[in-house]
Length: 205
Image (tube, rainbow, N blue to C red):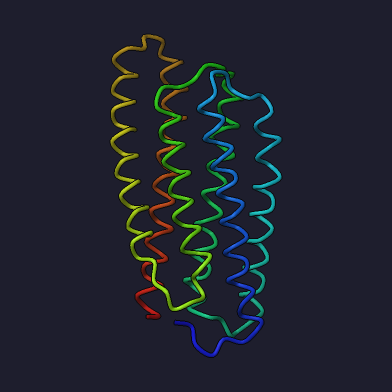
């Protein structure tokens, strides 16, 4: 895959490695956040610098795409992949910020499970992106991300059903459901990222 690469083209692969490393660190912090008996009020300060690094990498990649005509694979694929990975970071920062904004201090049931699934997904994605430049295919890791997304769907549906069954305060239902919605969306974006990678692997195999 990706034969006859020029040195400058390798920067794209370095950027993919760097951004997914930051995303996985964000996922780890988020998982610890939702697993704690009481939510960390300083979570935003821990995640924001990582999210900013992801934004910087994404911006750098987009600017390079606008200047360079030679790329290791289709420009559209590079753009779609970097933007989708960056979106995962946006969601992780956004969901923790929303918890603070809504002044939720006690654990939201199943939020920790969804955050844990996202963490596992980012680990699988990192394996693939760390090795994207070599001929080795990581279809199985990509499929694992999709399997985990199906697991997240099940956890989400069960959690929302229980929330509507057991909670009587409409405002609390709204707040907690939005958190669950965002986490499920994070798992979905991980799957979409895996789909893009599968397409690239197949196209350039």
